[in-house]
Length: 314
Image (spheres, rainbow, N blue to C red):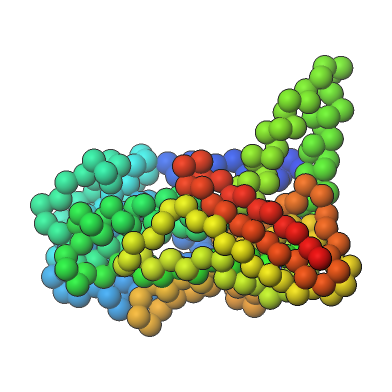
C-alpha cells in the first residue's frame, strides 16, 4: 500500500468516482499500465490458449487479450465489446497482423451468436469490488451458451476480503461533502441531496488508496467465487474481527484474490503491488470505537449493484 495522494480532496474525490466511460481511452490507459493486472492476464492467456483454439474475449476494450490470444496460436478469436472503443481495437489488431483471426463484435453478449463454441473464455469485467460489472452473470451466460465441454475460463476463481480501517481521510472528505449540501447553496435549502450521498458513498465502494498501517485487523474472506460453478449474484455473510480496545473504525476496505489459470493469478491484498483498482472503501456514517470485537454483516444486491454493511461491537 502506497502513501495517499495529497491531492485527494473533495473535488478530486467526486471526479474520480464518476462511472468510467469505457468508450474513452482514459480508462484503458489505467488498465493497460497496470502491470499486475495486465501482465498476469497475458501470462495466463499464454499458458492456457493452445494452437487452433477458439477464444471468446468478453469486454475486449482495446483488444489486448484478443491479440495475445491470437499470438498464442488461437485459430479464431471472437472479441465482444459494447462501446465504440472496439473500432480502435480492430485497427490495433490489424496493424499487429492478427486482424484476420480476430472478429470484433460490437454488441451486448446476450445478443451475440457465434458460429462455434469456445475452448477458452476470457473476461476482465472485474468491478471496483469485483461484483459491480456483472462478472458472475456474464461468465454464467458465456459458460452456458458458448463454452465447449472441458473448456477453460479466465479467471477461474475470485475471493473477496474485507477489513476494518482507522483512516479518517475519506470520512472527513465525506463530512465536508455532506456539509456543503446541509449548509445550503446560494441561500437555498438543498438538504434532499444529502440522501443521495448514502447511495453514492455508503452503499457503493469508493476506490481510494490506504496505508496498510490503518487496517485494524487482517482481511477476512466474505465471498468465494468459482466461475466454473453456479454462483448466486446476491449474497450475504458475517465476519468477526478482533481489534485493539477502543480502536477507531471509520470504514471497511475491500481486497480480492484472483486465480486466472492453474499457475497464474494476482491479488490486491496488503503487501501486494498497488493496482488501478486501488482499494474499494466503504465509509461508515459515524465512526465506531469497539472494545475488542467487531462483527460485520455484509450483503450485496446485484439488481442495484449495491452493498449493505452493518457493523456491531460488544
